[in-house]
Length: 172
Image (tube, rainbow, N blue to C red; front, side, top):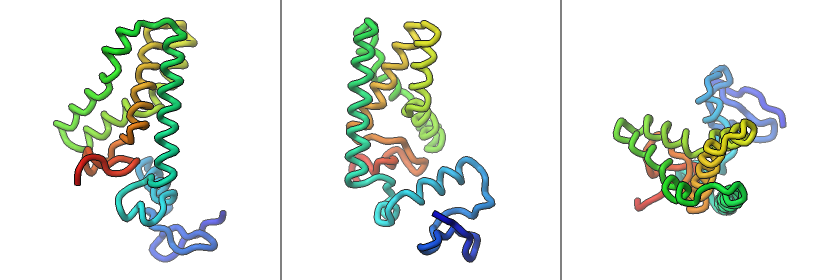
């Protein structure tokens, strides 16, 4: 698909109208991620503040269930301590305490521990280095993230704890 600039520096698809994204000259990671997130979401979901809805949300929840099942299976196959699994399974949620500092710090801390981008490389490193402790901790983290996604809890937005990439959680 071809893109070009339209008035006010916004991106325009060749066959569509102007997309509501930051100008192309912004190269910060935040601008790139914002542009990517807004370009992929359907207009009604963006208007409601959600980035995933309907069938996409269901697929993401199913994906979380698959990650949870795979992590539990690998954990059991590795012969790791189930007591450690039970004790540490909810430990990543302690990152919510960063919300006491503010919503930006809270979202950053929470998202850092609730993404596969940290847990999967950690698991690979643990297995490659032959470290059972690192491997077990990484699998517990993968299981926790999968469990959260399966229940519909997503990565947090800086606007507040209840705003996630899977939609609003809690009561409005």
